[in-house]
Structures are given as C-alpha cells and as structure tokens.
Image 1 (tube, rainbow, N blue to C red):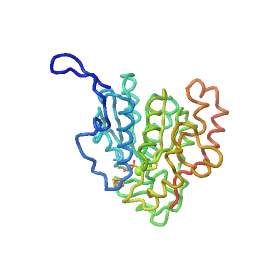
Image 2: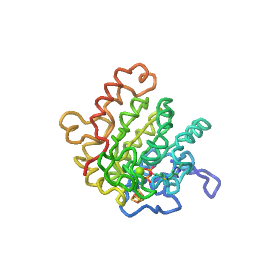
Image 3: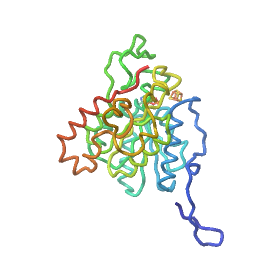
Length: 289
Ligand SMILES: Cc1ncc(C[n+]2csc(CCOP(=O)(O)OP(=O)(O)O)c2C)c(N)n1
Ligand code: SF4
Ligand SMILES: [Mg+2]
C-alpha cells in the first residue's frame, strides 16, 4: 500500500501490484533464461508485502543476472564485479529503513565477491541476497564458475572442470548467515514465498536460486533443476523431512533455520550450526544432467 496525493490535495491509498515493480527497460536476457523467473518472483514478493518502490534498493555486481536493477522499478545500483554486498552494506548502514535486496550471479557472489559473502554473513547484515546460480559465467560467454560441476566442459575447461564446486548453503551457514534457502527460478510463486520470508527476516538472508543459463550451460536445464520439485507441497517454511526430503533434496529453507533465527541464538548454537551444516552438506551443489 502506498499513499499518494490525489487531484484535490487529499491523500489516497493505492494497492501495489507486481506490475508496479516493472522497470522502464525490458530485460535483454536470452529467451528462456532462468533470471526472468527471479525478476517475476521479486516483483510478486514486493507486491505481496506492499513495500513501496521508493523504500526498496536493489544492488548488483556485474553479470547477466547483475543487470537486474535496471529491470526492476525501485532505487538501484549496478556496481562492480563482486562488490555488491559491500555497497549494499553501506547503503543499509546509511538508511536502516530501506529494504535492500542484492542480486547477482554465482561468479559475482561466490567467486570474485567470495570475501564479501563471508564477512557480510558473519556480520549478519540485514540484507536479502538473491544469487542466480547457473554454475557458469554467463555474461562473459561461458567460463567455469565456483559452482560448476566436476567434469563440466566450458570454454575455460575444455576437458572438464577438475575442481570441487563450492557449496553455497553450507558456506553461508558456517559463515553465520541466519536465513539460508534454496530456490528455483522455474517456480516464481514458490520463490516469491521464499523471498518474502527472507525480506522479513532481520539479518543476513541468502537464497541460492537454481537459474539455468540456457545458452552456456547445457547440463543445468529447467528440467534438471526442477527434478522432484512440487511447489504445492513445498509452501511454507517447514523443511522437507524423511521421504519428502529424499524426493526433493535441494529446494526450500534449510533445516537449521528454526535453531538460528536470530543472531543471538546463532551465537549460542555453534553446535547446532555444525549439525545443520552436516545436514545441508547432503544438499547437492547443483542438479546433474
Ligand atoms: C573485476 C572484474 N573482473 C572480471 C570481469 C569480467 N566479468 C564480467 S561478468 C563476469 C562473470 C559473471 O558471471 P556470474 O556472476 O555468474 O553472472 P552471470 O552472467 O552468470 O549471471 C566476469 C568474469 C569484470 N567485469 N570485472
Ligand atoms: S547468457 Fe545465459 S545467463 Fe546470460 S542472459 Fe543468456 S541465458 Fe541468461
Ligand atoms: Mg553465473
């Protein structure tokens, strides 16, 4: 809900819809790029929370996914490769009232920006971090990234990657993030629900989103990312358990969230955190072909 002056000088309450967050520039992402779903999900989440565009700041680094602020109607900053979290921390320090959403890619956030990822989570800065994880450097036309699978052939690894991929979920938990989730761009409704929870969470929240690059990563597709995923059963914050977790191992909120939902609790629960890490480590770093 936003309040505007009407023609008679009085004020009127206007119900915001997802369209109110549509930017003035149309995305130039490739047709079928997963990032469209993330844009759609953030627009839905902000409309459902009725946050006025002038109370939102989106901050990005560099990459296809980092073009995001240009396509979203709010304040926006397109910063330097890997530096979005540092800039966003400054913005949040300057204005605590702002809803600050950081958007970027796996290369931007877990590679060149890996140090900021560690320390922003450790400081538990009240930011929402949406990482569009496509396991590849998309903008620079397809090089290996920190989340690329072992054996993945890219322009920079023509014989297949020999490096073990980084697990963003366990990294975030061990670094001190107090809300960690895994989403999928092919189901914007479910993703919007996760984003709403992340925005409402007071502290650092990471959502690692499987967001396929249909041009440079042929092994991570919408189908492989969605495997075993049924949105209707995944609504809410309850982590999947037992057979449900076995069938849907990589989407939702991590099991540790209830134990570490505030920074004070997180400090008291290092033991719990390592247990959660051990559980989260069973989540794959990415879907296989
Ligand atoms: C300091 C610096 N190093 C390297 C680059 C080149 N560069 C631009 S985007 C990018 C990778 C982007 O990958 P990712 O963050 O995963 O985003 P995607 O394009 O996949 O969405 C690189 C290496 C740069 N712009 N600045
Ligand atoms: S290159 Fe990949 S990540 Fe970039 S817009 Fe195209 S599909 Fe999306
Ligand atoms: Mg990428």
